[in-house]
Amino acid sequence: MALTEHYIDSDELHPIDVVENIAELHEWEFDRIADDQIAMAVEGQWRTYSITLAWSAFDETLRLICTFEMEPPEEKMGRVYEMLNSVNDLCWSGAFTWWGEQKLMVYRYGLVLAGDQVAGSEQIDTLIKAAVVSCERFYPAFQLVTWGDRTPDEALQIAMAEAYGRA
Image (cartoon, rainbow, N blue to C red; front, top):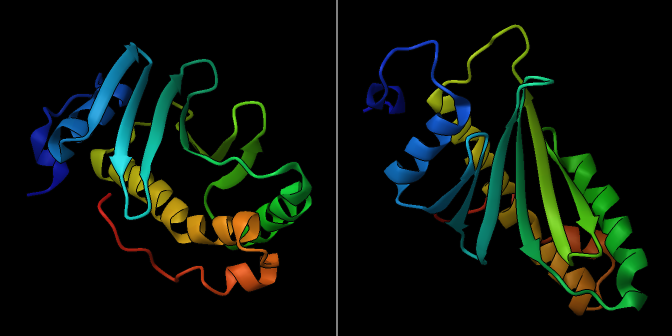
């Protein structure tokens, strides 16, 4: 059964309502932080990822942030930044960034829905799964650069073409 069959056909369906229904369907832990924001935990093969989706009516964008904790030693930060550049060259949708103060690796994506466009449930479900797949794909490479004394080029050799897990 398609995800859209779980929804009433309505142009008034808020994107975060759709995300909440998807989280319920997948039995993910979630918290509706506000009318325009939801946070959830999605288990992957390597770890559980924190995912937040927020709707901005101002610029009509559904923003996704998927994070996982990392604590690289200060002397490895040059390699971490080099790794970020290499990884982002391989990502066609979304991008990784490092939030040093929070010690978080962050995958970000913004889905622009200008002109009163509506994101379908399959589209949002795919957006969430793509974030988890990207994190699963590159998590081992980030760890090798941080803790395995590997160069970014060496670490990227193990980045799988497709990750397996439960998204």
